[in-house]
Length: 263
Image 1 (tube, rainbow, N blue to C red):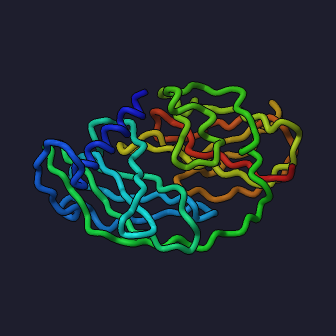
Image 2 (spheres, one colour):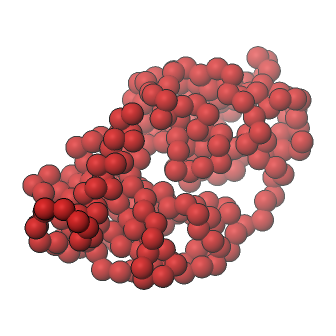
């Protein structure tokens, strides 16, 4: 699959940048030569997943190595579909612990083959926030309909798996994208969040969405985003259809759709 191939290529290139085995003898340049400002982190409410965002002055295939000690041990790469590299990077770091300091190193390769590597840096995860809107019912739900899927690697089920390192992408549906989720039984719903996917060219970003409850009442539009607000709602239903109302077009979809409520 294309996504897996891209990630494999990125890992191989980064391994070379880290001094892995191979025949390449390229000099490693400082990542600061291509970085635009300092990297920033956005954490999920549980503080177990973080999105690292950094821009570069050139198109590059980038990754971040991280861990609880200077020996690192984990690797995260961009989810963007562009195999030629890009200038806006957002690898997702998973398996984190709240209130813990981590070491990390940015690294990558430019289109001319130059390898880049940052100094060893640190970040600290925040305290996990308490759930205020009940259980995330989407984690036990099923996708029963979808406008389209880009590939098996970008399946609709990725939008409700609780993993910010996976995502659902359509095949160019833009504002016509939709996904229908069956909660398995009638539930009382108290909160909604729609975490949009994005492409480095600025496309594929959902800005607002609507929710149709059991083929009847339409709620919204509500704000989506990369770190969207929790939308307080109050309704009872089983089958919820999420429609993209407005977006920047392209392969729209969702990193995660959360439906909070009572079992």
